[in-house]
View (cartoon, rainbow, N blue to C red):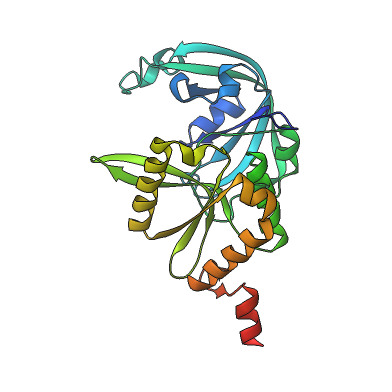
Length: 271
C-alpha cells in the first residue's frame, strides 16, 4: 500500500545480552533471510535500531541504540558465529547488516507495557521523534487514522501487539492491530483495509478461526472496514468506548491495578 512516508528503518530485536556488544562495538547485526522484512530483502533499509528484550533486566523493553546501515551481505549463521556451531540454525542463511557508528538515544524509547515484538519497519523521522514504542509504528493509512483518533480520545492502546497460541501443539502468533486492556476482557481492535476482504470465503473463514481462538484466550474482537473508518470514524470510536466500559473500563497505563470508564453514557451516569 502506498504511503506518503517511505519506510527506511528496521527495529531489530536483541534476545540475548551478548548480541548488544556485537552490534555496538563490532557494528553488525544479523537477520534470518527467511523472516527478514521486505525493506531488508530489497536493501532499502538505511537505519537499524535495537529493541532490548526481557533478558536486559536493568533496561528491558526499550530502544537505546541505532545506527546507519552501510552494507548488507548474506552468510550462513555458522560463518557469522562459528563458536555456535551447535545451533540448529547454523546452516541457515542470514543477512549480515554492517553498521556505521552506533548512537545512543538521549532518552530511550520505552514500551509502556513490557511486550514482545517482531521486526518493526518504519520511517527514520518517525523513529527519532518517538516518545514511546507505539509512536514508532508506521502502518496502513486507516490504522494511522484510527491511532490518531485513539490518541485524541485518550484511549490507551498497544499497536501491533503479539500474543501466542497453540495450534496442533505448535506455538503460533497473532499480531493485533490494536490491543486495548480492560478489567474483564481485553479488546483486539482490527482494521480491515481491503474492500474485498469479506468477498473472499477463505478470508472470512480465517477471521472466524482467529476470532474463536482469541475468544478462548479471553479477548473480545472488534473489526472495522476501511469504509467505516473513512466515513463513520466517530461512530467507531463511540462503539469502542461502549465496549470498553462493558468490559469493566480501560486499564490505567501508569497503574495497571486501576481502570476507568470512558463512554459518554457512563460519564453522565457518574455525574
